[in-house]
Image (tube, rainbow, N blue to C red; front, side):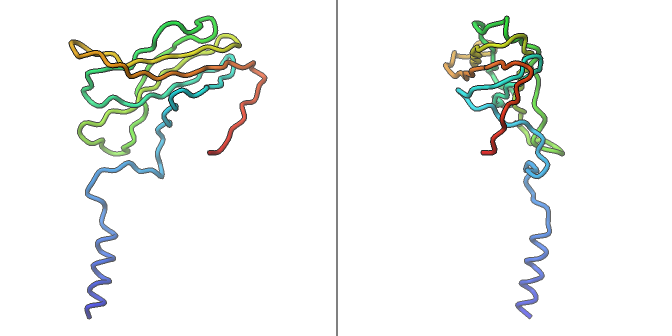
Amino acid sequence: MKTLLRLFLLVTLCGLPLACNQPNRTVLKTPLLTPDNSQIQAINGRDFEVVLPSLGAGAQYQWVLQGGYDESLIQFSEEKEAPSEYPAQAPLGYAPNRIFVFKTLAVGLTDLVFTQEPIGDQPAVTTQRSFSVQVLPSQTTIPTTIP
């Protein structure tokens, strides 16, 4: 009898949905973060994206693209929110990652630097992310590697 009761409790508890709102990793449609100091290969004439981590809901800082990259090679198009990792309702304090979209204009190599800058009267921070961007001719096939 105890064995049946234990089996019943085990099946019942395992079948209950989790109380915590967790991302569903099987249907995750959120783009992965672009690793800091990575080299991005983009095809000339196509857009590419840089995905930076969220700074949190109600953040007092924001990601800012620094000048100094070769604007004859790439052009900043837009900044947008990444899709939510939570399919139903995001937990309090959640904010999605940020996506920066660029258009390629010519073949060449340039660097992108993003810094965290305060919104309002917050103290300055030195957090930054850097990326090397190589724009390849449009006939080039970029090899994909599976990590």
